[in-house]
Figure 1 (cartoon, rainbow, N blue to C red):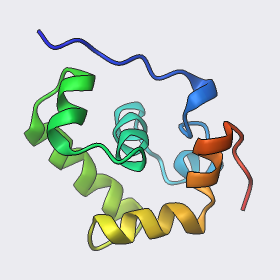
Figure 2: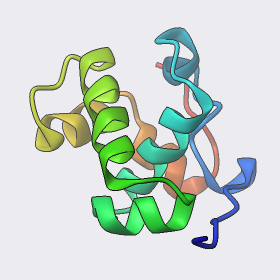
Figure 3: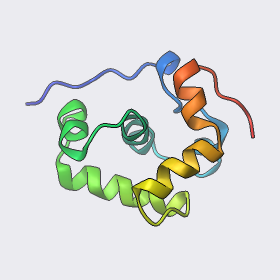
Length: 95
């Protein structure tokens, strides 16, 4: 079985108000964090010990929740909500 990456609250955006308000699941939050770190589907699948098909499904769910039509829009949405800044600083700013 693949090794799993531990995603700690102090290095992630999983507790950002927008992810809570939009009803992200814990796994969607983990996948989203790794997407924001620039990881591809294969790396995310390996890090979380899930299949690439599951990663794609979670990404699709995340894009729907953020009204993004593709991953580029997803990153733009993250920037709009200061999620990327929160990820880098370890502090979630509130929109």
